[in-house]
Length: 395
Ligand SMILES: [Ca+2]
Image (cartoon, rainbow, N blue to C red; front, side, top):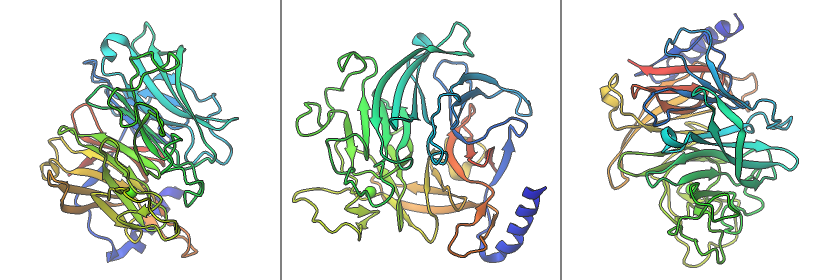
């Protein structure tokens, strides 16, 4: 009842100031408990099962019947103590990826936070004899990355077309990259990492791809694939092999980047495609800072949630568009980009009903806070909402 009031008020207050939505969000799985969803991932095992990862440490298998009131629990790590008391906003389970050969080896990968000491854990686990149940006793920790704050650590993981595991790690700074981590190649925070989970070279846990940009580990950690990243949220490889990464901005600009091997994406010398005014030391000579392919100002949104290329059939107008959103203001856009990275169009598709805060300095309450954009088994677009709902983009 409270929610209904909020929505009505929001719509009334919103008035004509908001652009008209060109898509709808249709609620799906409304009878399931889906608090704090962070990803829907489909393993390449032919079953087309949709695995829903929840930030509090559970992985559910979404039932075929979208009206069902129960889902199978594939894994439950909710008693692991992933979050600190003040960490519930960003800590927890942040990433899930299935091995490209999951069908044969039953292996999948998790990225989650742990406390005392605060760290990001990347681990491997195996399915049990029951294909719908993971076996937590098989867990094998690959990598642990020390963190010094509860926020800005990213944590999305995915396999690239090369079969290697990519890990997006934020700068672990509360603000301003105070520790100057993002440019420092001696730490794994503020980076995109790439590791070979099939190798046992590194402490017998994983290997370093021979063509990683700093594979020799001299003056830079060999796990690093790209750097100068603030808080990556939303990693995606498209069919053309392009690697999309949304980097959450701090004061003014939210970014969409195309990541290339060894690339330096600027933070904290730059925020978006401009100098970051709070960093006064000079950019090292010869440094090549790569600007985002697209950015938006904090007048339009406050925290980017990266998405994926739309490949479904229901919304032909969106064919080939990169669908992404803003977590704080509840917006969804479609970005069309040339092969050379030049933006052709950026259309606002949807704006969540919202209620302005009493205090104008505070953020509004929005109904839909997108945490991820994921393809369902038919290739249609699911929008995951941190407030606890799943939606499908529809006409
Ligand atoms: Ca950047």
